[in-house]
Length: 214
Image 1 (cartoon, one colour):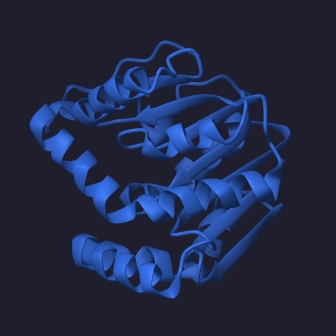
Image 2 (image 1 turned 90 degrees about the horizontal axis):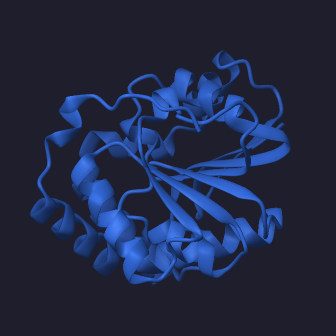
């Protein structure tokens, strides 16, 4: 990884707010975390090598993915307080040798070219100011023969009741930003603009996902 400075404006949230955010995610979306981790492993079979989780939040998804694989995971988060909670969660799970928390921005990923066998990003897509640039960064960091799984949703292993409940909570929380996860044509347009040709978009009850291959 390269050494890049992190802008000071990442200090906006304090630790107590980040801990509350972590608590709400676990309470409201844990079935989706488990479902999506299971889906990623089953679809790609990438059980070892290097994974980057872009926009990892408090590392709940990275921890679940780690439990289901032998991957070494770099969990990237740009908000410092959330990064600190992620770091504590990783330590509490005894996974500091498997999951490396990274403070950084999806628009300027602090990794070398062709660094990762698998890149995942669940639920951070709506936050990206320049989505074309982030997809270009993801593709740059992905190894040849690697796969990327980017988007949002709850995975295919949840019940209809869980889907309805979590969709309601997500849409109420994200408001207009939630529209990003119901716009497959816009996602396709963004990926084309990023110059990526080998991709597939899935839009069904599991969510909206772009699957990238390199």
